[in-house]
Length: 188
Ligand code: ATP
Ligand code: AMP
Ligand code: MG
Image 1 (cartoon, rainbow, N blue to C red):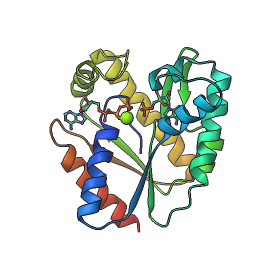
Image 2: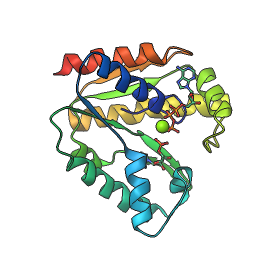
Image 3: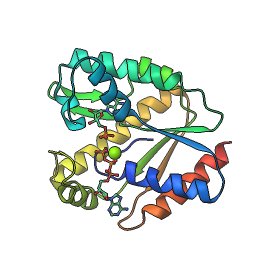
Image 4: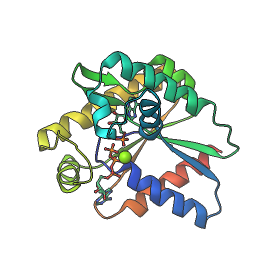
């Protein structure tokens, strides 16, 4: 599951956890950034999650690949949902969140893009003071939403899997989680 920074992926997935529990659907949710952050710590870099994308690109690439392997090795009988990004804005440029080797390790059955209107994304980025999301103008949000779809199409072609778009409307994250659960249930 992917979406631009601040669109509400983690919020929707927290809600999904609750909805799935109520409906007795077994799910495992993993945050790719959490796994990378733990690996950075192992490499001696105890850094904030929003500082990882400012690190040397070779180190990010290594950690990204290790995170993908770690997630690959999770043995789970239930559906595995990965909270991640189609691309990351690094100092070196727009960098793929799932380059070929990462995509192969994750081996998704489906790509879900969480979306919201650019105005909503910009507003959520600005309002959320718990994170350092530096790209918080309306223009930034519009451009990011476009890039997200471009990157998702490449992934869909390479992995040969469909894309579903789930809207996370203002105040309706529960609805988004329910939509997501329906999609997951229709997979299995
Ligand atoms: P990142 O990629 O940076 O981790 P994210 O996509 O996981 O971002 P969240 O951290 O879940 O985004 O949400 C960003 C902000 O938007 C939070 O303050 C959250 O409370 C708010 N938010 C999420 N979904 C909604 C919604 N449907 N309506 C209103 N606010 C929302
Ligand atoms: P998040 O909390 O989802 O924003 O993740 C925190 C950070 O983890 C992001 O800003 C990126 O630096 C990193 N990250 C998450 N997913 C990926 C990915 N697929 N590839 C590379 N970096 C990622
Ligand atoms: Mg998040």
